[in-house]
Amino acid sequence: MSFYPQASRISSSTVQLTAIGNTNISVKYRDTSGINAGVQQVVADTLKFDLTNGFDEEILAGSVRFQLGSDTFIDRTSTLYRNIDPATGSGTASGSVQYGTGIVELNSWTPNSDNALVLQSLTTTTDLPPINHLSFRTPTIPIRPGSLTVVVSLLNGGQLTLTANEQGIIETSQAHGKINYDTGFVDLYFYTKTEITAVNRAEIEANAWYDVALEYSEEGKTYIDTPQWVVANTVRYNAIAYTYIPLDSDILGLSATRLPLDGRVPVFRIGDIGIISATKLQELPSHIAGQTYNLNDQRISWCELEDSNGVKVPYDLYTVDYDYGRVTLGGDFAIGTLVAPLIAKYRYQDMGLINDVQINGQVTFTKPLTHNYAAEDSIVGSALVIGDMQARYTKKYAQTTWSSTWADVPSGAAISANYNDALYPIVVTNNGAIQERWALVFTDTTNFRIIGEYSGQIGTGSVNADCAPLNPVTNAPYFIVKKEGWGSGWVSGNVLRFNTIAANFPIWCIRTVKQSEPTVMSDQFQIMYRGDIDRVI
Image (tube, rainbow, N blue to C red; front, side):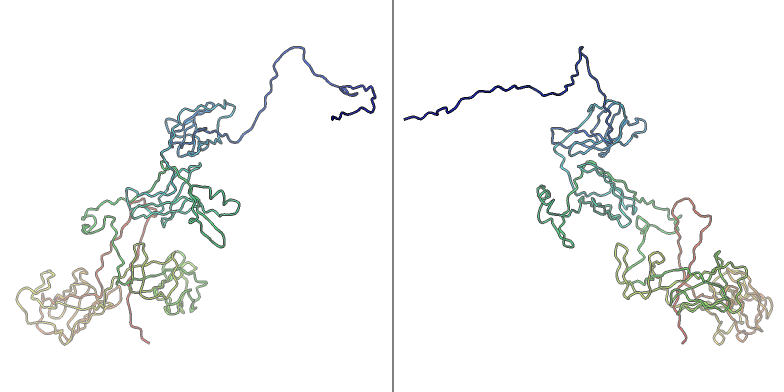
């Protein structure tokens, strides 16, 4: 059985339908055909191009050359230069190129010109993997400290210019390394310290170089050193190396056979005596006679006063307390021709046995230092140990005639006259004696001339009085010949010869001045002896 719907009611109605209501319609039209033209000016600060669009290859440095409008661009270590002058090789830095991606970014070009890029030269490769570790050695050594500069290009664009400091350290946010100036070995790592967070962890772990072992923690945070890939064939460096020219022995004054090539000889050895000293200046607040002024340091080893023009104050106008670091002006002190303020120049020192010497210049003593030393006013020096010194006389003899020959043994026949130095030895002192050969040449039976080999005739004497010629430098006698020691029989022409040995030590002083233009009209240096004394309590 089937069921069909049944109609219950049928009705009809009429409705008028229209496309639009009562609205005004505006119509624009043209009755002739034509071309509509419009101009819109766009201002851009950079232009970007992809030289390797569709290719995953690395660009070789120095191979990029293209034309944009009337400008020709080339690359130099990832930097783009335009309109190179063929005569000078110079151009205008105008942008950069990323060797890894091929992206060119220009920030300088000639305006109002065609913006169509015409590629003229480009070389790519798949056989030059990027690096983030660089090691090399300079062909010439040693390198002057602070003179190394390394320039590299990053794979993702940009150029790094790295300079080593005086200690040979290279440290930036992207480059870390050092150079050994003595060997010329350079070791550089390129990475950026990056904090790992929940936001960037997935991105970091997606890199092929990622390894969980590379993560480390600092102050509760997790970091990883993100490699900064460098284009290997863009690495270049600049450094200044020392070259040593051997000097003629006649010019140098000694044989250079055993000297090192660089002319430097070690002055510090284990077991030697070393001295560290600091020299300071302190301006006195006034210059009142009899006033005592405290220096900033105690237990000083040397002190002298100068005026503001560098003129030394006479030593008899002040006294120094070395233990407590005090300077006292004399009771009759007057400024006179000196120019105030007065300046105290003083020095304190520590002497000790050298226990260790490192190649980096570090010197270790067997005992701690007793003063505070700052790098700007302190020096470390080796000590030449001389030992005890004492003035004395030697080679005493009498001779018939004086032939002006400075020999240490008598000549001619022996004479009866002599000087009895067994009972009355010739007196010499450390303060007065000098290194000299003396001749007392008689002019008659009692009087004689006092002649030195280098000093010449310095006076006359008599057997009836002590002979004590004065050393004008120290105001002490060169020697004293006692009147009681003279025997009889002296006649004109006879001579008494002897030598005095001074309380000093022969030291070779060689001062080296490097070749350069003079910066001052005059120069000077000062040699000082350091001696131990017995203090009287």
